[in-house]
Length: 273
Image (cartoon, rainbow, N blue to C red):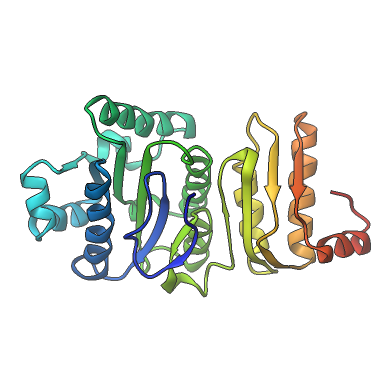
């Protein structure tokens, strides 16, 4: 079973886990998180890959123990422009194909899967870029459960707007506990078992709306709400908007385990889900 929630260390992500880390210092908390994440990958027999900006790559190549892992081939460094041409994300399906292909190569080489250490702050710092990154993380998360790919997505907290950090982190099942004030809820899992956990209030309902939009692809969505601890009217409206959008495309958003409060709010708003 995949782990989810707020964690102090990404050392138990699992073979198909997906974690978000908001670091403050490349040679400090980024390095600590990277080591914990990669050590688990080594224990699991996964191939390991780093992709990231030049400053992070310099640390990976020069600071122990990562330097030694690169030197002996344990950790492969992927050129950033090969994964993100021109420093930009590809279309979602194409970007996913890049990681899925690398995972298949790892399996073909006798490894149990692929573990990706990603420092991708630059993809989330431009105007509006954090929203695109959040939607990409949600898209990828929908395909990772049961697939032999795990990832630690790292972002410089000083460089990404708080609103952006909240949206990006909320699309991951595992989140740096230091982001607790920003992450009111988490939306994770595949379309047929999508889980919403935590609280949806006026602050976080816009984030929920953004992430649900990334899940409106070619499949019906089952949204489990048994771990939803609070929702107010703005969150209910976000769910209604997503359901209406999906119905217009010939698909369905089905809610499972909704708290009684959601139904009462829907009645007051005179909307149906």
